[in-house]
Length: 217
Image 1: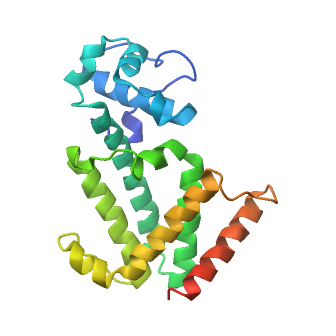
Image 2: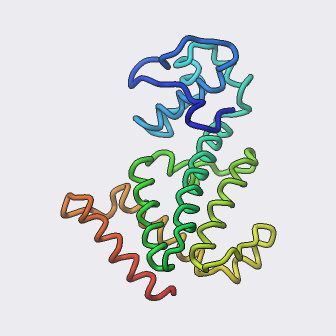
Image 3: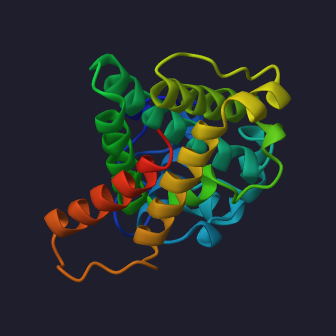
C-alpha cells in the first residue's frame, strides 16, 4: 500500500484518475482517488463504489486491495500523522525554548487543519474503530509521543502504560486538547478572522497560546 507521496498517482479535478489502468497499481489508484475526494469534497462523499468507478474497476474489486473503506481512510490518516510527526521532530531538533517551540507547534497544527480539513477529521475521531488498522495506532502514538517530548523537554510518554501517562503527562494532554480544539475552531471556522489576513490569524493564535501556556508551564 502506498505510504509516500511519490507513490501516489496524479489526479484531475474532475473525472477519473489521469492514468491508465494496470492490475498492479489498483491499490495506489484507489488511494489517490480517495485523497482527491478529500481535497475537493468531504469524507462522506467517499464510497468504495465511487472509488472503483473513478479508477475504472468493478465495485467488488475494492476488497481485493483493502479489507474495508474504513481501513483505507485510516491508511490516509496514518500518513497524515506521519507528516505531523515529521513537523514535530523538526521543531524538537531545533532546540528552541519550550514556549517558542509550543507556539510553533500550534501554528503547524492550525495550518495543517486549514489545509487538510477532511484529513484532519479522519485523523481525529471520524473512524470509531481504529483498531482495524494497526499502522494508525503506531503513527498516532508516535506523533503524540513527540508532542509530549516537546511539552516536557524529555521523552516520558509510556504508550504501554496509559494509566501512568494519564497521571504523569497531564500537561501534554492539556496542550494537545488546546491545540486540537483551536485548530478545529479556526478551520471550521468557529473562530472568525476579523483582519482577514494570515498575519492577523497568526497573531491571534500566538496570543491565545501564550495565554494558555502561562497556566501550563
